[in-house]
Structure formats: structure tokens, C-alpha cells
Length: 399
Ligand code: HGY
Ligand code: MN
Ligand code: MN
Ligand code: MN
Image: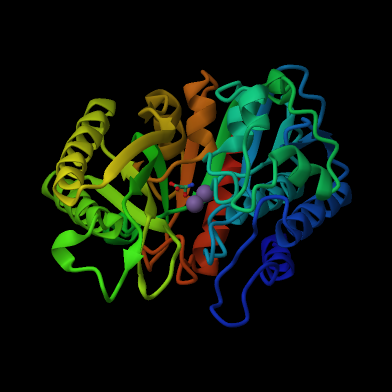
């Protein structure tokens, strides 16, 4: 099975020697090394590579002619992330092509292996940037405005990585009739149910919001507590309120990133910026959660004499995958039905589904249940079961 060889080749790219975590920043050196590896593997298989000018790449087995079966995922990672989130879907897709060829399968519909750009939004702040540009969910004009944390424009980052970015209308999906993304499970559902493989039923709505808390810089020693307008306090109470509100309703609210100015030990901050990642089962729940968090935050800002501005940076609505397609994939397998389960993690598959492309997701068991961390893991046996499941699915869809 070629999966092991490919996984050994790709595994070390972008892994930190200290934390063991991965940082494959979009259009950064490690992610570009992964992408170059991907192109080499496509060339080995005589796949026809197409770039869409927006950072996305699809390599075709056969001529899609508007009716292709696409699989694949992303190669970028979050900061200090895991090895499997993204790359497992790309490597499994290449291994599934090999397995189908070993079976002597000749596709009636072309099969494409894709790598979408900037799925994590870890550099330019917009999750699933590549697939959003591919579907038109984000316009090229909006993408041109994006800057990374150092102020580098998206176009410059892409050009510096050797791409010839157009950021124009992507033709990538003109060839795609159906998309199946294999992904490591980011949770414990499969391990709790005792299954190596699962199929996605839906993706929760997911929003990212910037909370800008402005206060009054002052001396940490000479300023009495009652005289302060400290944005760190307003931020801290907001983070606590968000966590409490989400927990009460079985939802998700995370402040995983903050910026403090001037960020000095002996100065009351003038500004604190926090980014909230919120996820709920329905669009209405997400709007209600945000409303309640913002209401409590504004109330605290009044108490602290600080000022709060909340900006929605990216919001993805609820995605319900085609239940018939999900059931077809879940049912046809030797070991009986696989579980059809929801995910609270966002995926390129969600963006394509929202754009009307018939889409399905296959999950591979992660016994740790942990993701976006070096501890993310999928046993080799389960990865191979995933390749087999993906090959079976592609055989059915492209046969
Ligand atoms: O953030 C997410 O849900 C996904 O892993 N990009
Ligand atoms: Mn992912
Ligand atoms: Mn991820
Ligand atoms: Mn099988």
C-alpha cells in the first residue's frame, strides 16, 4: 500500500522539533514543500494538474469534461497543529487512486485529487479561503483586501511563494460534479461508537468575530484600581461570559488569540483585541449566542469605562450534506453501516456543499479525539481503512 510510503515522506514537513506540532502556514515554506511533494506524486501518477489562480490545485485522472468526481482536502495547518488535519485527505486520495488502479478499475468519470488553499484561515483570517474563492463565496476583490498579521497582502504572499496569482473567477468547479473529502475525525464520536470510519451528516454553523476593547493606558503602579479604564478586564469578563453562555447551551465559544497594546508588564493596556470562534447547531443559535455575548461584553465595557467594537470576520452557515449520498456511502461496506455523524469543525466540503456541489465527507477514527494540536492521531490501520473506504466510494461514484 503506497499510503505508508507517502505518509513517511510527508510526515516530517513543517513539524517543530520542540513541540512536535506542525505549522504549515499558507504560502509559507513548509506548506509550499508539501505542495511541491503533492505535485511530484501527481506527476508519478500521470495526473493532469490544473491550478485555478487562487491557490487551489486539482490533478485529474481522466478528462473531467464537466462531470468529474473530486476528492482531496488541504495541506495547510493551524499554528502548532496536528499531522492529519488536511494532509490525511490528500494522501488518502492519492493512495485511493493507486488502489483503484491495482483493482484494474477504469473510471467512466474522471477522478480529481485536490488541495485547497488556506483552509484553516490561520494566516489571512478567513477560513476555507481557497474553496470560498473556488465557489465564489468570497470575491477576488474581497480576497485582495486580506492581509496577514505582518500586513502582507494575500497577492504578495502568493507571488512570493512562486504562484502566478490571478484571484479571478475560479474555473476549478466547472469540472466537478461531486466532491468527497476524507478527513481525520476531530472528536471522539467514532472511538466511542467503536467504528474506524464514519460519514458526515452536517457541519455546524461557525463564526469568527474580532472584539476590539479600547481603554486608557496608564501606569501599573501609580494608577488606583478604581481609576482605571482597563480593556484587559473587559476582555477577561467577556471571555468568561462567552465560555459560560456556550457551556450552558452545549455550544462552543473560544477566545484562542488575543493582541494586547502596548503589551507591557508595567502598563495598563490601551487596547486588547480578542478573536472569538463560535459554533452552534443552527444559524439562529449562533446569532443568539453572539448577541448574548456582545450584550454582556458591552455591559461590562460600560462598567469599566472602556469601548468595544465587534466585527464579524467570517461566518459559515449550517451545512447539511445530501442524506442520500451520505447513506449510499455509509451503507456499501463489508463491515456494515458506518455511523453518519455531525461535525463541529469547518471543512472545504462544507463550502462546496453550500455552493450546491453534491458533497460527502468520510471520517477516519482519531482515538485521542484531539485536533488542532500535536496530539492529533489516527492509527495506521484506520488510515488504511479510510483509503479502502474512499476507494470504494470513488469506484461507486466514478464507475
Ligand atoms: O476550524 C475548523 O473548524 C477547521 O479545522 N478548519
Ligand atoms: Mn481540516
Ligand atoms: Mn483544522
Ligand atoms: Mn472495502
